[in-house]
Amino acid sequence: MIYDFFELTTQAYTVALRDLKRFWQNIYWLAGQVAMNIADLLIFGLIFRGIVRPDLIPDYIRFITPGILCLSIFISSFTIGREVGVELRREVTHYLVSLPITRGALVAGRVLGGVLRGLMYQVGFLILAVLIMTPPTLDKWILILAASIFISVTMSSLSITLVTLTRDFNIQAAIRSLVYFVFFFMSNVFYPERALRARLGPVAPVALYSPVSMAVTIYRYGFGYSTEVDLVFNTAGLLLWSTATVLLAYKLYIRNLRR
Image 1 (cartoon, helix red, strand yellow):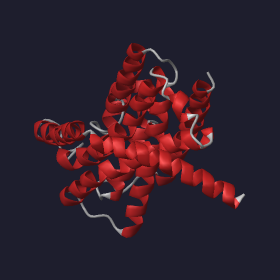
Image 2: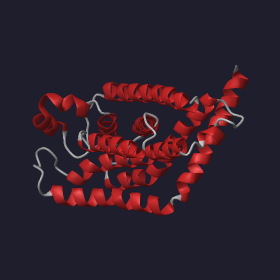
Image 3: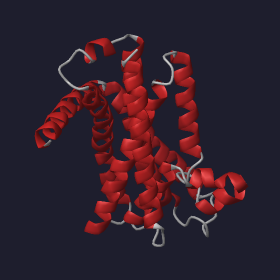
């Protein structure tokens, strides 16, 4: 059993390493994403700093920095789904299943590839958050790392799930755009929870139970912006999200491999 687990891990790592190398080859896309994330921080921070009520958000730049930190790992982890979708449409999967690896290792490797992309891409923004906000203590670093792993697993798995629902590129793009919109704007990335409850009313739980909101809440606690948060709720929620999306990605990806 130990040998089988080691073999599965080695195979998954090989697939993930392939995806990671392809990620770093898109240098112009990466530069554009970094510029976009930094622009979000500067533009939203500078504009809304003088508009938002100071009793709700005393310093909007410090408020939005954990949100940008979350969006950086969201976007980078989500890219794995785009590549899986291309391979499914071009039937590259026929080659992948012919490799001397199990299908379970193939799925695990694709998810792991997205996770590694997200974590490595986020490092620069973690450094930026340390410079802008309060440096975390060791126990808070552990929480931040756990939140990053859970959100990257969730987004990597979710992106694979979405592209395996259909092979039509236009439908895939529409679904991806809808998911981007929901997670970006129906969350506490740009707005405080009090504003979400006031504006969304009975729909507010959709935003508060979002994995993005849960991760951002932990980041804000970790970097000293918030002091009173429900860590059990947010950590357990992220764990449930990541578990559910991994199982869904596995089931749908395997279904496509058997076609």
